[in-house]
Image 1: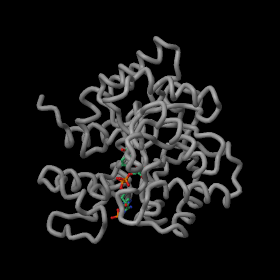
Image 2 (image 1 turned 60 degrees about the vertical axis):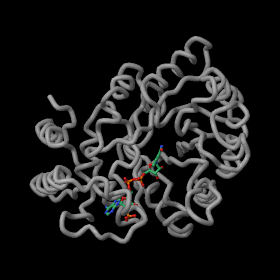
Image 3 (image 1 turned 90 degrees about the vertical axis):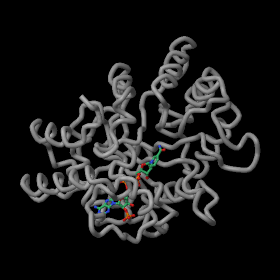
Image 4 (image 1 turned 135 degrees about the vertical axis):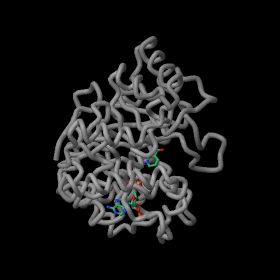
Length: 323
Ligand SMILES: NC(=O)c1ccc[n+]([C@@H]2O[C@H](COP(=O)([O-])OP(=O)(O)OC[C@H]3O[C@@H](n4cnc5c(N)ncnc54)[C@H](OP(=O)(O)O)[C@@H]3O)[C@@H](O)[C@H]2O)c1
């Protein structure tokens, strides 16, 4: 496994982060343990979860993925400091008016709940899941700062922010001398580039934010399981993958497959992850395998080093800028 600094911090994380949105959704708890054991045995030290996972699934109250991760940490016997545990706050987690958002009240309460579910004394990276337009950014950053001062949180990060909101947060932290976002978690893959590359990529470069692309395989589209003429896949992720069914994207899949085979039997998913890993701005894509076979495939991407010429060819085929 390769380890990288998380942005401009001194914290080292594995080049792949283990996502946990699927745990307690379409991966049952005993299988989740096997997945986490295998990820850890392969050198992954970085785990991403969220307080809300997976509240959108019938019968799941939310917090279930955190509970599974917490029980796994305990049963694994691993010293806590061997893991970098990231979680998130912001989503709706109940019916009350303060059961969501980035207010001081909700952030502090959610952190306490996450610590309890994760059975740990601290969260390594506490992330705002997305921005809260109704709370002053100074209140949000001061609440995160309180948690850092209390030793309950080590670093804070953000996800799903437009560039101006990220800048507002960074400036608020600098002005008030508060804990500052050190990382950014965007939806980013070779087939979905514009959202991150239009503005946030430069912000992350300029401000030294670690970048943690989520859904790097677009829920399975970038694996080859969906094909031009055979895309009837039985998966809870199938509906989400449909948005990528365009001729341009099928051609990109063909190219990823052809280049992976030429390079030495690398899969489409390994090539798609390798494209992200080649970018200096990217720290650690967050993978979401449903079983160990998928995990092993995803892990193989770390050894799939692209030449600049290969990276450029894939970038040209997935370019979104018109000139
Ligand atoms: N910050 C945010 O707002 C946000 C949002 C979403 C996710 N996340 C984080 O990112 C993590 C990963 O997201 P994701 O699950 O969307 O990641 P993803 O890697 O894009 O999709 C995972 C899905 O891809 C398929 N897959 C992966 N490897 C495969 C292989 N080798 N062969 C065939 N299929 C393969 C599986 O689909 P099947 O299930 O069909 O087999 C799997 O469920 C989450 O767990 C979460 O931690 C964050």
